[in-house]
Image 1 (tube, rainbow, N blue to C red):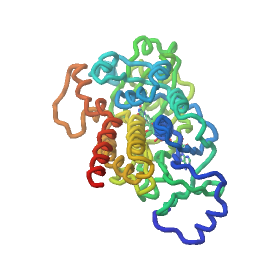
Image 2: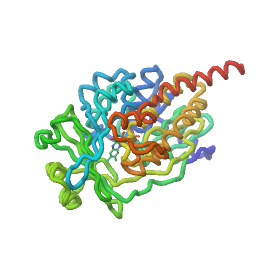
Image 3: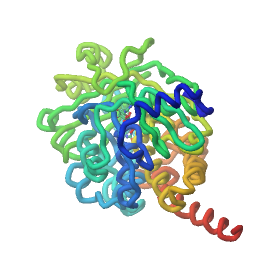
Image 4: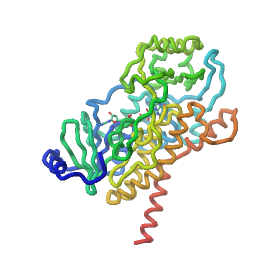
Length: 421
Ligand SMILES: Cc1cc2nc3c(=O)[nH]c(=O)nc-3n(C[C@H](O)[C@H](O)[C@H](O)COP(=O)(O)OP(=O)(O)OC[C@H]3O[C@@H](n4cnc5c(N)ncnc54)[C@H](O)[C@@H]3O)c2cc1C
């Protein structure tokens, strides 16, 4: 993959095997949280696009995801408030508890206070529910499933995509929303994912099997030596989703469909308090995800190509922000393209990157610190004891509005261009 001009032979082959359809203005590679959110924003702005995803159908990933107000307010603006509220749970607090005796160490107030402070709720949802809300907003019109991209080549006048079946297609602009193993990213960077020395076991338990955890909607995190377990309600409170870290020397799997061993999980949490061990034992099936991230990169864009979500900034899950940042990206990028127009897309991509890369890098680095990173990385405000104060201390993260920031920046660009013309 390169952004340099291609040899004539490759160009010729491309012409003869290209699909007969007219090239879409924008091709989004990947229909995960990032890709579908971007599709929804572009659809709302009336800009044509196509989403291609290697999956033959969107699967039911058995895990939850936390959606913080920095992303929820953007989803609300896309008109998804009612649909989200119907499938989400609204936790009252984020509690940190001691691993061996369940003693409460600290709590960050969420619930109604979060909406008062940040104008949007903190939600916990099943991934499949979030995905179907986003897929509904993106619409099925521009979606091509079972379509894997294996190579991306940028030229001055187009980007060429090579599919797994050997066929090729051109697009004016390509957005890589293809996750941590992004093929599109290879045009921009030559790095590889980095193993972080641990795995996460994930499971879903019907709420009636763990009534002590289902009574009050809470995000609970038990912090222990070298590992921690987080759980919260999903599916409107009908199930509890958990993620439990286990140190590991070697990576074994990194896929949402890889299974873990329930015996290995039980053994790693032997001696923890019974609330945790009961929860872990109640899961019949556990998924296993080996932890990887990459270092931040300063450039995400070329003239016709950019990255969103994990393709741009894969991060460890310890701040629960990867998906939230993907939504921030999608709204910022869609806003830049809509405001500056597809004719000035190179400028839109550059403005988008300048707005997003520093913030994503801060959160990527913070996520490596583990759960302690929930205070702003590098901030020295000292310990905050009160739950509401803890919530207010998150303003740098939850108070950010990537859509408003992009709108203001593109207005400045347009004003400057107007003065120059
Ligand atoms: C255990 C765990 C817990 C987490 N918890 C949270 C949380 O609570 N809150 C939060 O905000 N984030 C969380 N995250 C992070 C979050 O899951 C990711 O940041 C988010 O899923 C990234 O979305 P994405 O769309 O960028 O990438 P992905 O979800 O990886 O989607 C990429 C898409 O691209 C497609 N694709 C890939 N390659 C190709 C190709 N070559 N051709 C065509 N299609 C392709 C894939 O099929 C997929 O559909 C967690 C992560 C983990 C591992």
